[in-house]
Image (cartoon, rainbow, N blue to C red):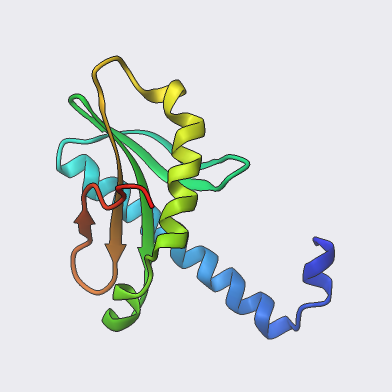
Length: 129
């Protein structure tokens, strides 16, 4: 067990594990949602020094670096994405773009919100900041 986790109360560790499991399920659901809409998943959970990309997907000449957020309450879902989180995704995308992009690709940052009901795909949410 990592050092920091040893000092965390058991309830916090349990909550953290449950949140991690929810996040993984949401990423799996988002990947299938994208596939059903014509996207090809190139990678999942790619870590860089500046952040993590949940999904990297392609459809035609569009390459999307996708942040997936899952919340049980609709109100919490609307607050799940902010400029700070998106800037970390954008930083990670800058590190990874050369690996996945082709000449003339449109590269963008998308978000998929997973709550009750169908996932909601928000395309091109980051325009720098």
